[in-house]
Image 1 (cartoon, rainbow, N blue to C red):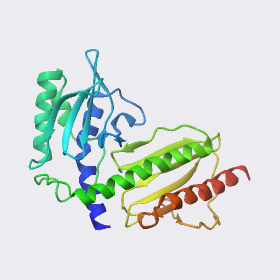
Image 2: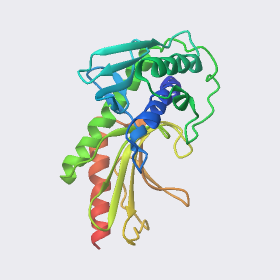
Image 3: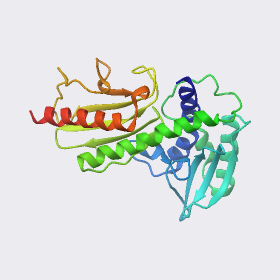
Image 4: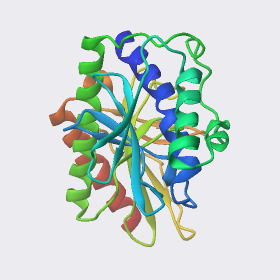
Length: 264
């Protein structure tokens, strides 16, 4: 448990570099999705967004096994790598900024600006980056892969489409679906936080167009539980229960309640 939480924090912090690249150079989106990330299970890389530079396309990613920031072109061919291990993140970003200025003719100073949101102030942020623990990384990758698969299960179940991304602020792998003109469904995999002391799946239903979702007396879940308070309302399934089978049950029961509730 603690090993997973530790590696989750490290990767969260290091992915802020990719978010900065998207913030500064990707096509801006009103919902801030130009800063978000995607887990490439084949390449074992966390990628940002494509950036267009003088009719060429580039994308920055964190290669997890090698712990390098890789910049690739539209063919996914490596353009340049930046080693992380043994360096401070600020120094790696300075090297990136110099490359951005000199080779891409983009504004490296803008890239170095603080992000427009805050994440927890991790106590290791000013330390040299250590080598990720292999076993912790394997477990992290397993659960993030399960998160992607489970998001897809929900889109298939609802017969709709949604982009599965990692949002760099809260670092959740998630989707948001406006199912109809009454409800929106937010689902994903979150870090341990004030809601849960371990990583967890979350499922929350929101009213849209003035519709109000009634969370009074929700159905009993076979796995997971409801958390309903003034700060957040929804169902959660903790890491300790997060098997593929349990996740499917959790989705089926939560979705059944959500659709029945909005049509009643």
